[in-house]
Figure 1 (spheres, rainbow, N blue to C red):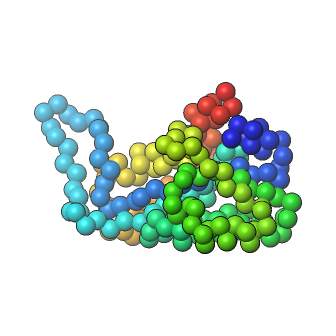
Figure 2 (cartoon, rainbow, N blue to C red):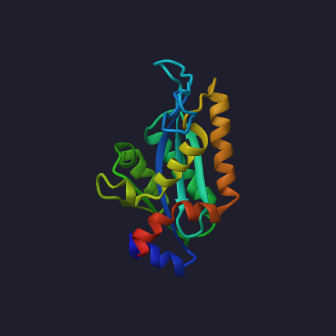
Length: 195
């Protein structure tokens, strides 16, 4: 991956993306927080059957631009929608010389036959590089998800999916408008790869 990173820094036609999906649920993500001594913070929850969606995303590790979409399931349809969004964002149909390297984990949805057929249609413009098993530290999109949890879902109860997805979309819009902040969020990854 380090080779792709260094090459993408000097080749404007090579795009290096790292992608992943994360669950967003009405069930709040509970984490430690500051409270007054002797007072316990209460966080409401919707119960066992909490509505959820999957946030599919990719981060350009060179420019700091991000891409995301919400999908009801963690399946090959979600990854295919992400691949289509990548093809549109980087205008692959209009730039046959452009190549996208997409780094993914080994999730079964990523390796589905329909995904492979979709990749074949892009005439090798989108190439998948697989992360080693059990290595989330090598995927900077995981750092984006951690930041989203801190900013949006940690210790916060959303009454309905519309408010939750609105908050998630707002978070991503903020990131898209500030790529320097994204590069700062993924700086640990950059240090590991480029270091």
